[in-house]
Length: 43
Image 1 (tube, rainbow, N blue to C red):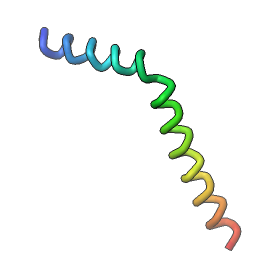
Image 2 (tube, helix red, strand yellow; image 1 turned 180 degrees about the horizontal axis):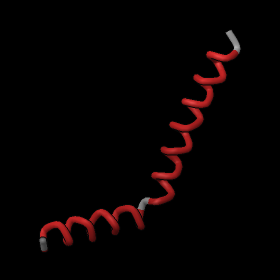
Image 3 (cartoon, helix red, strand yellow; image 1 turned 90 degrees about the horizontal axis):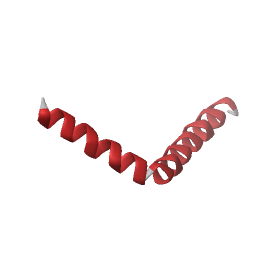
């Protein structure tokens, strides 16, 4: 159980440090999927 808590704390720390980078990556992925969806509608 302590290993699970330590792992959760380390992941939480990484997310709190790099949240802006994760947001940047998710925004790019969302834009690519949205572009692909709109591209299929245009055909």
